[in-house]
Length: 444
Image 1 (cartoon, rainbow, N blue to C red):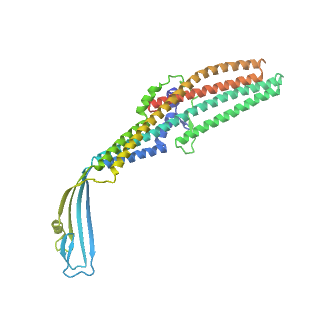
Image 2 (cartoon, one colour):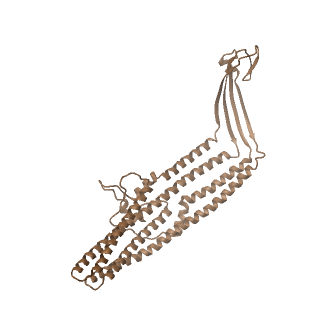
Image 3 (cartoon, rainbow, N blue to C red):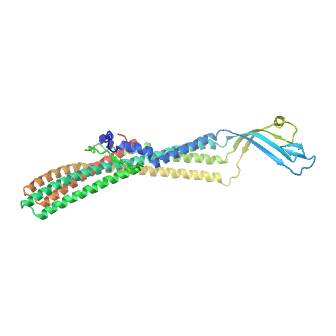
């Protein structure tokens, strides 16, 4: 794996007095803690957990206390009139009187076709789906970081290759100037050597710009917006095992089906549809509830004291409520049919996700196999081109080769080196992605 192959990167520590150089492990850990999109999915998971707690609480009885305090003003009362206040007949000629009521009520839905219990299951599934959404976002972030990190390593090594090429071009130009002075080379040939040196300088600028751009993208992905210098640890020499054994495609896919959150998410969606169907079917079942209460009232129209009135007017009640649906304007049938259709849609989406997962893994596998073969050939080609260029350079010094042959040899060497780098890092990246899909995590 790329992380194992490049273990020197992950064990490195920033040098005191210099800007922090981020390792891949540090980038991933920081992103998982600070990425805004990932934090939002975690908030959604906490919100889904609150829905679970509320659904469980709905299984319990409810108990509430209530009181009502009223002041009544009658500017023109009838003398000797009897007034009914809170169920009690009082005789008063007061223009202003006060009454109060006090109660304690108990309600409990004993049975409603298990809709409340199924709602708990449904909310628990939603909480699990929210957790999987968070895992999917985390996986996506890790893949993006790994890709950018490999591109940074590749670009850094490409800068080194171009600098080596520039060094060679400068030596050739210096040698050409000496040969012009002694009359063994024309000014036109020297101009070609100078142009090649200038092209190598341009290539270095372009490669360094690519490196800076990839670092900028990584910094943006990490949500770092301060003015501090951002840099990535790049070893002097990356010795990656691009020739390691590539994981078998069927084995990776089989394990990925049991670990990848997008597959688990669709399985939960199917289960969620089943629960929704049970809830919908229960809409035509009776609902049984228990109610009870205790209350009393007081009034200033009574000659009794407050305590005596509370005692005399005390009343208690209890009852059972049964509600049987008879005609619901097709609501139950519609809900059942929609739940069934949702299940069929989820099953189709599961197949789609499985197809996409296989296609993604197959793509990584094909690229790993292809680039590994390219890397084997590129290494041999680089060695051959290096030996050929050294021979051409010596023959050019002796006057046996012309300037065109020397420049072609150098161009071929640079192309071979770049092909080797590209195939090497693409192989390492694709193999690492296969291990990531197989194990579900990026590990050293």
